[in-house]
Amino acid sequence: MSIAKVRIQTDLGMSELRVDVLVGFLGIFAAIGGLLSGWTSEILGRRWSLLMAAMFEIAGAVCMALAEDFILLAIGRVLIGLGVGSALMIAPLYAAELAPMRLRGALVTMMEISINVGILLGYVVGFALADLPLENGWRWMLGIGAALPIVLVVLTIFMPESPRWLVEHGETGLAEAVLAQTCAPEEADQVMTSLQQDRVLGFRGAWSDVLCPQQKWRRLIWAGMGTALFQQLSGVEAAVYYTPEVLKAAGLDNEDDQFLANVGVGLIRVLFVIVALLVVDKRVGRRKMLLGSAAVMTVAQLMIGLNFRVWRIPGLAVAGQCLFMAGYSLGFGPIGWVLVSEIFPLQIRGLAVGIATFINRMTAGLIALFFMSLNKSVVGNAGTFWMFGGFCLVSFIFTYYVVPETKGKSLEELENDLARDPKMPICCASRLKRRYRPTPGPLSASSPLKGVKGSPT
Image (cartoon, rainbow, N blue to C red; front, side, top):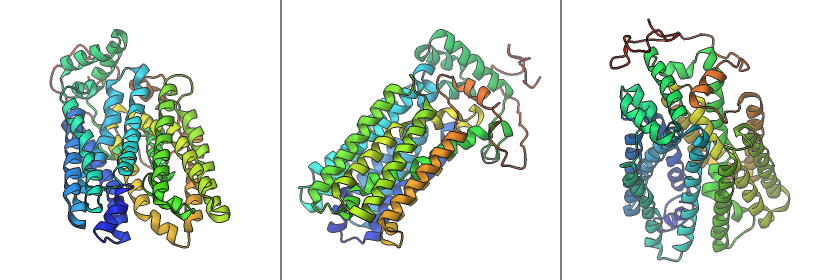
């Protein structure tokens, strides 16, 4: 879309406002998709919800490629947004619940690699098709976007369901079979025992448990929601969609050079997220990577703003964009989703990840929608990037004081250990009582787990 939007504006005679609306629509409706998928993933399961997200993306890409006016383009963008938001919520949750503990961070990080490879491919395809006739080139750029979701539809057919979702819905035999395929026997037994205990308790989270949580959950929820928010307040969405415009404002006038620099920024993003993949589950840990990422992004955004105010050197603008993408891809890009997928308590995880995705994508959509307007307002180019730099600095402080280390622990251990940490200040006046309800099926009150501490006996 970064390159296609320039062609669409010329071919259809579209105003700059409508182009900004098209760009922003994806993030805004991805927020809605992420919120709804928190519900659908609990009802339909992670696997079928992921399949549904891919179908939305295919329909949206085809609609945009065939569009003749703004309305059809907007409809296609809405469909893609719903699919992207659902996939962003479900994919890290599914990977975290399916993966063994030693590979969980790496597998969730693979999602960010896939996103970055997709963005890079979009830049490359846009650059490669830039010389096609105006009326057809942008259609191919957008239509090709249906290819990878089609692959996802085929692969999803052969993927297992999340064992945690299966246990919650009484399919303990299937859950044991999936864990036997994905985890070592000892870890599979530990996870299964913990999941069975949770099901005996019969607690099911509600919206109120996320929005005004129990005291023991508050730090976990604040850390996850805040990380999702600051990932986008860094200004990454502006870098994804508006690098050519930023470079043009910095003095790089040649359109081919702008598009080529766009590809270079995308390549930097892919290379550094691969580095993150190699270290996320080994030495460094999530928290240190987030801190380092926030520091690098702060320097990069302040440097870009200073370049606009003082020098206006195109090469320095390119270097700043590359430095920002390197910092983002080493931390807040991949690690943000790792943390969101693993830090929320099991009973509210689906809803909480859905709300975190809503916050993330709504912020992304609003930034994409208003970025160019901010640049042309009294804030200006320099002020906009200094604002992003300020947000990055705040994210460093937030991570330092709020976000705990989650590396090397099972999802169940994280919930038990981090929930005891009293460092997060109390910000809600009321405490919610747990709600229990009888759970039918093989894990009823007569099951072998009757008598587990905390069970309704």
